[in-house]
Image (spheres, each protein chain N blue to C red):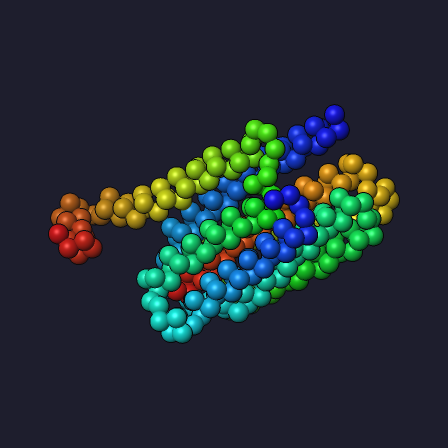
Length: 116
Length: 189
């Protein structure tokens, strides 16, 4: 969609809708009969949808001409970010195993954490 | 030829935005790893006020919309309308920054500065870096308004406004993730 007043209005209304939905889900979970186990993935999905909405309606990424260099740069950047973020969380959550005083302590820790 | 050069400038700016996105990605990773390490201090749940965060989010979203309107006005060669929408964006951006700095100074006054815990260090670094970008954006709006007054909508000035618009939308997108991952998830976990 090229830069038009219509595209900005659609983008703005959709963003507003997703923001208020995410806020209400966290603020009034009882109203939606939802637990935080459902709400947390839900608000992450809402944030990703809003990212797409703004890329399309505000930054006009969907109507790029010719070779789509902007899209290519964005996709590879998101790839790097996912590796860094997921990798960091993964490594740091397991690093505790290697920070114990002795192998015996480590076994106790693993048993208490993971139940085996 | 003019058009081709302009496209190149905008793509160059886009590549800068992508590297900036990696900075924010790394800061998000640091925050995700450190958010539980409160060192006996307040947690995200104790500290953050969701209505304030929502107010910040809405102010920034509206400013993202008005800067888009400024770009549309620039494309249809309406100088005064462009200046007016940029001025609205400036006021909204300044409101956002004021709300954020008020929140920061409230935390610091309670003794919960970046020195309190690893969680707060990573919080202030992530949200502060975003705030710094907003401050630079505000300076950019002022410069753009002055150039519009002096030179009008020359191709160079129009191209600058298009790039500013990309920058401002980019900062709104980063804020959506700060709002979700820091404020909302801090309340939900």
